[in-house]
Amino acid sequence: MNLFYTEKIEGNFAYMSEEEARHVVQVLRKREGDELRFTDGKGGMYTGKIAETGKKKCVLEITERKTEPSPPAGGLHIAIAPTKNINRYEWFLEKATETGLAEITPLFCAHSERKKVRLDRLEKILLSAMKQSLQTHLPQLNEPIKFSEFIKNAAAEQRFIAHCEADGDKNQLKDALQKGKSVLILIGPEGDFSPEEIAAAKAAGFVPVALGNTRLRTETAGIYAAAVTAAMNL
Amino acid sequence: MNLFYTEKIEGNFAYMSEEEARHVVQVLRKREGDELRFTDGKGGMYTGKIAETGKKKCVLEITERKTEPSPPAGGLHIAIAPTKNINRYEWFLEKATETGLAEITPLFCAHSERKKVRLDRLEKILLSAMKQSLQTHLPQLNEPIKFSEFIKNAAAEQRFIAHCEADGDKNQLKDALQKGKSVLILIGPEGDFSPEEIAAAKAAGFVPVALGNTRLRTETAGIYAAAVTAAMNL
Image (spheres, each protein chain N blue to C red):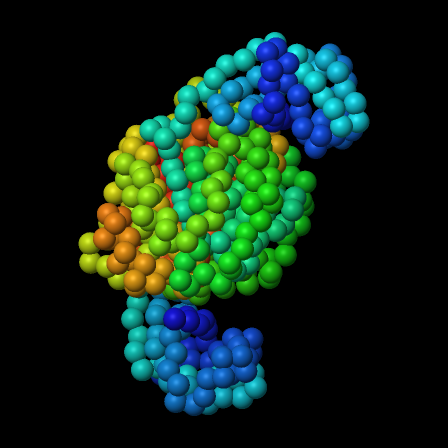
């Protein structure tokens, strides 16, 4: 089964983007009258019949629509430092979207080697992973932000920092999670958060958590956090 | 911190492989008298002083040794179909090794597009991920095997098949897992297990489980299973 995506829904008609239309019409060779399933990325799941096609055009007449519930209690927000090798970050984005999360913030930290990300490229990965995993909620990808700025205003019912330093009162994420509550988890770059960042996060109310008992790479920490939070909320 | 690896330990001396020695001597520029930590991949964690070096030679005199406990109850065994794009499989191997597992079996299934894997290449990934994550147990990588052969003799205290078909009695892996028991999880290729394979596995005593509520790619299913099993056994 394929799931398609468009944001542009007006009345009983949905209009695919040029890229999605090209895929549907030229690659999959769908024709007028064919039925497709698509989502608006905001919880809507639609069935539609193709009403009109062109090389880069595909208009659908909606035949069925339903809304899927939001992720529990606002879901999971991971704020994570982009990795030096961007492939690793993109892999995290794909995998975390597949297991399901609500929001991602690229975080620039004291030890970050990478200072830039291309949001348009990352958006495409999220979109593709959402469709691949048959989900109807597109994770929100925020503008990159400095760690010190981010922790000032970051809100969630549960806020964790997954740093790698020894820290007496660190619980495992699995045990710290409370089912149904919104969660924000901070994950640092290669080289971890700086001691000053850890202290500032704790002062701002973030609770240190451990992600298992092995040393994880940044992107593995992100995937572990996403998978375990998704599982604990089932 | 770096962790190194060698299997060749005789009395009070450890002998690194040519590749590891080259890395230590030529890349990291370690010299006689320098101290290193290394593992034998079987639970042993050693500290040693470099006693002798050459371009591809590094002999260490052991100054400290301790043995880390085995993973709980024999740990986790994932039998998983190699993906068409081998990068995705290698990514799974790296990530699952980081979060921790005991054994991996490449499984050739009815819907497998890939019929070959290079075990030597995969072994290197496991070794590197074990060192990276500071672990002392190298996951055992088995010879690839046909699904029908594998399920005949596959043993573990808990045996699951993570197929994607609708199946009335399917529990979530998170709920089906019993802490401390050895676990074997079957994960299929792109296109899932065939109905015949699912029936055969069930007849052989494998219990169907769900890996969350989204449709996961093969390698994502593998990472999810590894992360969630590791977390539930903490």
